[in-house]
Amino acid sequence: MEQPLLNEHNKAEYPPMHTAEHILNQTMVRMFGCPRSMNAHIERKKSKCDYRLSEAPTAEQITEAERRVNEVIDRHLPVTVEFVSREEAAAAVDLSKLSAAAGETVRIVRVGDYDACACIGAHVGNTSEIGHFSVLSYDYEGGRLRLRFKLTE
Image (cartoon, rainbow, N blue to C red; front, side, top):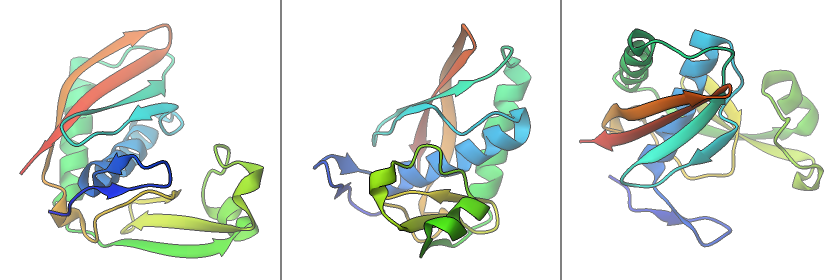
């Protein structure tokens, strides 16, 4: 597995966990029709993502989300990066979190045919480098679902 990389804020990033976050985000979008996480804290040992949902998911739905994330990881998909114009990017991905100061060229990270997202973070080259995704816990309050998760080899 890759070692953590430092991003532009000198914060260590762990590429397997960051890539798993992309897969989780797309899984949540597909399962619940919600936007990608509104808030995320991604660390090597455990991470969390917050989602806006109109109602609390069932335990079965959380288990199914976990299963789907691992299914995508197990497909050994390539993780690629491309640079496109802001206009091209807007036609393919949600740019609502991208600041106007980001410039006219946007970095798109693709996880095979499963996910595409504007992102400046560090990622693995293939989902086979991620490991196993596990939901540690979750809670739902006031329309916010918080998922806490980890990766194991």
